[in-house]
Length: 193
Length: 193
DNA sequence: TGTACATCAGTGAACGCGCGTTCACTGATGTAC
DNA sequence: TGTACATCAGTGAACGCGCGTTCACTGATGTAC
Image (cartoon, rainbow over all chains, first blue to last red; front, side, top):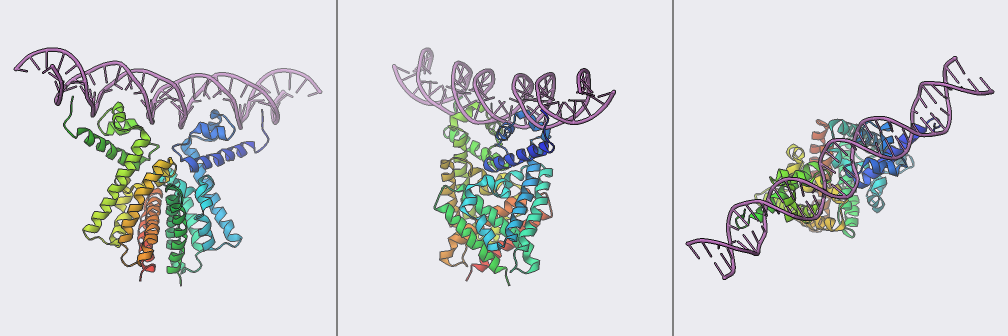
């Protein structure tokens, strides 16, 4: 069969979206091509009409997924969320319990570190824009300290979320999250004025 | 051949040590039994004289490895290192560049989160002792805030180390590390007095 | 003291399975004449 | 307008390979008589 204009692009994007969710849920190494394609409603072979290799998919997924997350953050700001609300959303039980729809960095940062330089380069490129956007929201922090503060907060957030996901169940996991919110806010406070 | 008394325990421990390094370097999912046994100087089959399954090894590795790390921290304290020095060592280029000999949590926390409940329980159990020990070093922080502060600092440390490992090369990676030290010290400062 | 047997850490080949990747093929539509 | 061919996203079987796990076997030593 022939397909309508734009069909291939739609399918391509669909595969990236499906892979992005599976990678975040199970990790890159533990997710197979066959599983991705089945989940996308296609067969194995079609994968290589869209990607040169699994690593190629990983790179496209990082590039698209991180800029998508950046846009989500940007929209949060646009509708009036401040730094505190962004932090509360990030360190929420909902985010903890749904890694497949959550932050790519907290789900995949350790695995990215083990991937080839080109993959890490794409990660780095996208993360820098993210940090920049986060820095802009730290209105109380002196301009020249904003970037450094944003990096530190981002590190806190990904470390805290990961720890809350790894420990077995409540109540410790919830305590880690709410403790993380307090800590991030105290830290911003310390860097303010 | 028969072996001297204690031989099996020595071999068992050796396999755990080898696996611990490989898991930290490449991740659990990407490390195979055959690779571990070859690195340990044995053949495949012997693995099941020592462990019921790969998951069994993962659990023993976490249990032993985390209590080993806790003892290392304990010894650092015994020889007079303070909280600042512990943080500087943790967020050093040497630690970043040698994950196979470094912190298990920063290397494996995201993967542990995807393992069965029993594995996460072992992780949790050991991490709590670690947090406690770290809390005791926060001498400037008011007693009732120490535990919460220790958790937050630990989250910062693992998040920062992971981020520094994932980004591509210097100078950003080094900046993330030294920025992390400043942030952790500022945070302790904010919680002091 | 000498012989027969038990022990058991480790060997190495094999199991079924899923991995990433390749490739000859399909078939609906578009294009050329 | 009708026919022959080109296009190309997707199919599905197959490739070699390594995975976790199983198992019959080895062989040096310890034990029993």
